[in-house]
Image 1 (tube, rainbow, N blue to C red):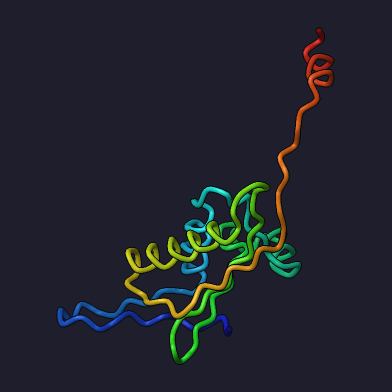
Image 2 (tube, one colour):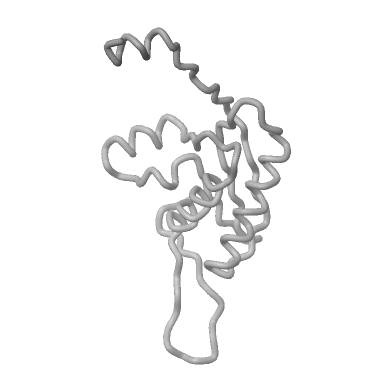
Length: 138
């Protein structure tokens, strides 16, 4: 995806001008929509996006989301880490539905596909009671 592509909105009959949406905005919206789903531990980006984020070039909200604008329409890829014990197919289906619905409500843009890649499982850390008592001075 090239950096300068903007998504053109449908022309309206009011002749006030045109509306363009940057793919980065779509990434942020999709990232927030995916994070809203119960069972999603976190989104995960690739190495390059992690370096760019640390250098201050990219927001963490779009981390783990890739938007591909083609002639046919919009394709979205989401990379998530799920929580342990959840039904992964159900969580992924909810992610897909929430992203499509949120983008439709906020931008009126139709989405061709939302591909969800589960790249890990997040385990809850159990806090040892003895360690907690030592920290409290008991």
